[in-house]
Length: 177
Image 1 (cartoon, helix red, strand yellow):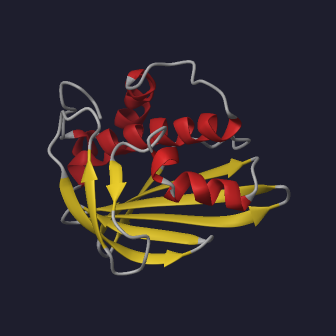
Image 2: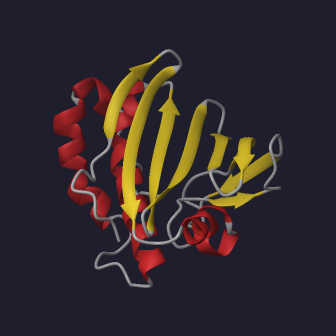
């Protein structure tokens, strides 16, 4: 999965809002990680929504939660440079950026979620934490030792404590992702 001891996200203020930043060292070749980030079947194992649309810069994207608990929404592919960089607008304001670099026999993944609303940083930080763990398990070919949403609930208190009350105003939906 990951060899990184710093698995928790960081929150930083940015000109365009707030940035949730995660770094993972994955023990898989860059091409395998890229496929997990871009192939629709691979995404189903770890990403919170489906991603429908062309994998080209400027393409319109459609996102839907497989559970149907939340409404679908639109976005746009901002940057698509295989196998290094994937960046897209996720909804009206959020920007997701996945950057890959070779790291020995593995890959260094840097994930940044830029959001306008500070109040949802804790909720989203815990959610991405779980998603990135699921990505690691998917790449390793292992079944996660937790049910969907349970890891999120375990790490949420850490994000609440470290990001603070202003970043914790958005409460999770009844059924998380």
